[in-house]
Amino acid sequence: MTSTRDTAPRGHTRGMGELIDIADKTTVLAPFGETLAQLGRERPEIVALTADMGRYSDILPFRDAHPDRFFNVGMAEQSLVMTAAGLAKTGKIAYCTTYSVFVTRRAYDFVAIAGAHSKAEVKIFAGMPGLTNGYGATHQATEDLNMMRGIADLTIIDPCDATELTQVVRAVADIPGTVYVRLLRGKVPVELGEDYRFVPGKAALLREGSGDVGVISTGYMTARSLDAAKAADNRGVQASVLHVPTIKPFDTAAVVEFARRHDRLVVAENHKTTGGLASLVTEALYQGGILRPLRRVGLADSFFECGSQEYLEAKYGVDLPAVTRAILGEV
Amino acid sequence: MPTTDREPPNIDELRDRAYQLRRMMMTMTRGKGEGYIAQGLGIADCLAALYFHELRHDPERPDWPERDRFLLSTGHYSIAMYAVLAAAGYIEEDELPTYGLNGSRLPMSTFDDTVGVEIVGGSLGHGLGQAVGMSLGLRLDDSPGRVYVEISDGELDEGSTWEAAMAGATFGCDNLVVLIDCNGIQADGPVTVAIEPVADKFTAFGWSTTEIDGNDMSALVEALEKSRVSDGKPKAIVMRTTPGSGVPTIVDRPRAHFVRVTDDEWAGLVQELEDNRDVHA
Ligand SMILES: Cc1ncc(C[n+]2csc(CCOP(=O)(O)OP(=O)(O)O)c2C)c(N)n1
Image (cartoon, rainbow over the protein chains, first blue to last red):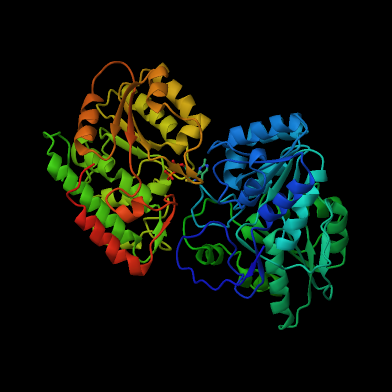
């Protein structure tokens, strides 16, 4: 793994799924593949598959380290999940990669039945989740959490940064059954401190504010929420941030407890505002008998166009200024 | 210029059309500096043969119900699609430099809200199935319109393609032609899935099949001519194409799926295209 700094300007559709606001951040290159290659050395039962997306999902370090345990099924996402499930039936732990859109939309039935229902040790690392690329609606998995949470016995994780992703790669090997992880690829920023520990199914309080406003976030939107909270500090608003990396099973207790301590809530996610984290939070609050003003930062129920990542995020209201405005309570 | 009646083919003229398409694509690569240019150059001859000879279409009436349909299944080949749409008069050539820019009508992947684009591409493995549906729809309407669909060799990995192949044969889609762009590459590099023998597979699936050099204009025109035969079967044309065709340096790129072109090398590549103008496969 090498650390780099990214300063490349971007003015149009390009690249594949790298995060954009990493200019001043330390990044790690391909944390997923590097960690998986290492894990493969420790555990011979680990195998890996891709659907013609090896290069674009950072899994090639595993292929290079363990060529006999690596299978590229070609651009065939249904086959990817079925093959992984079959391998799992013979005692393997099958990590597989493609883009989020294709594994969720095209291979849904196979994830549900060959994967989750069969309690198969299939670990899906889904590239370019949410709005992390500019190739339009065909490539933007803006409803993947919504779809996946509809599947029983499936674990869903949306890691925040390289530190968390690295831990998640190891952790999922010991989470029983099928797991869906939103993959961060390429140069992945480091946001969380060295003492951060990912605990499956648990939310993590990353920042304690004044009790005025609390942000509940997942995935890289947590990184953005931390940045936004810093920006809000300068304006006299001390926001708390609760990071919810495990979307399913959902840490209802932590969310309810956090909500109780804050006057206002902001939910931030790289997903539609319907069917994902914001929906889960409102369900939890209602169940806990808590009513709080809640502002959702996320995507509209729409198909999005092509364009640069900056352009799309600003246009659709999920960029850093949008999170900051939500924290400050500005329109 | 509407091409509603087919004239006898003029191979030299069609070759020149293909050159013009390549030139437009190179222009679109400039500034952007990256993209699926190798695939675009590879499919240029096929698109020239279709839009300037084979298809009955009218840029003045893109919704003409009796038009022949061309479906580009590989949305990432958008650069080639926009070039041919400009050359045929669906869009203005001076719009081409907006390719891939924020807010452009010519996005990096093809969507059916661009004039002349029939389907939403991008999610691969959709083209053949939708083409079968269009073929059936036109048949129900007694339309003379025919359906031509381009798919890539990578799309042969997808189960949906073979489901559609069986549907096309089951329903005897005589008015349907699939042009399979076997350029030998996909996202991770060379095709590694056992898709061969492609032509024999389509024949076994009940299609009338021809295999040609997809960068040979005479062979393209002849295969398209043959595909008009009414034999109660859908038609498959297996095209062996060279990614980057027309620009040797791009042909030689080891990672041709997604090519970066620097400002410094751009003029040299355009010169190569010019130098190879009269070289034919
Ligand atoms: C269903 C689906 N899966 C994966 C992708 C990602 N993808 C984009 S291009 C590509 C390669 C497909 O093969 P092919 O069209 O033959 O590649 P090319 O000739 O352009 O290199 C892949 C896997 C996609 N667009 N759609």
